[in-house]
Length: 312
Image (cartoon, rainbow, N blue to C red; front, side, top):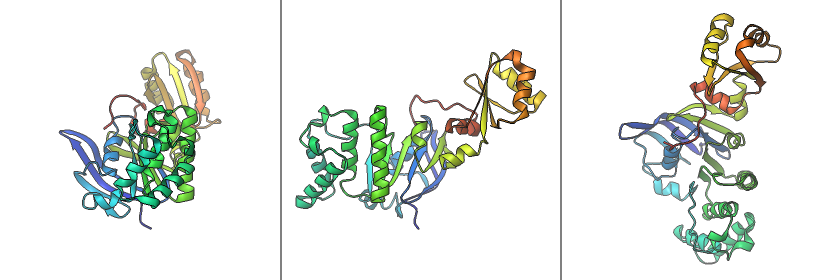
């Protein structure tokens, strides 16, 4: 079965700054796939290429079997795109936004009106048809964005940071809509995100850092790769203690934001007691917990999962 998205050796640079460096990944049809990474990891550049806004400089990118460089128009007819910043006209009413977007895809007359009715009902915004978009809450606007992206019945939806600016309740509703589109309509969903909890809801994720996909798999499998637990140690001088742990006990750890993180530890690991017995006077606190996707990022990069600045 053809992948919804296939990428091989994709690279892209802005002047002398590489934003993507030989990226390779595949997205299966009918799954929700997340591109997870801190800002500056390359997610935005990859999104622009997948949405046919930017042409790749090198490598292979196929979407629904079509080449993104030579068959961009064909791809646009099969893909729905939702940008991070609102793409609705705030001075138009909800129904008018959907109608104008349908015209762009050659839809008109009864067919278009029936499609609008179906989408208003599917996203529970029938009673908002005549409301100006600027009067809607962020969550309601996001539902209208979803309806708009589905006006031409695409096989694939691509989102850039879909939950940015939404409160927790609106974020939960938004995800229920995505999961319904996948389960009921067979739509493949690809999204970029820097929210760790959002990535946990994806079927699979590609973890990005500095323009590369450093790990790919289900959230469970990626976390499982770090073992049962991660030991976190807070100390007044974490770098010195990390070196002592490696030399005296044979435990390799990584210092991130003043915390020593040690993967692949379990409740019965004798090393935990040994660490506390030998270094208790240098330790402020010890925590043993199941690994998170942030722990995966730290293990793969040696850096913390920092959010802020501009994405690449």
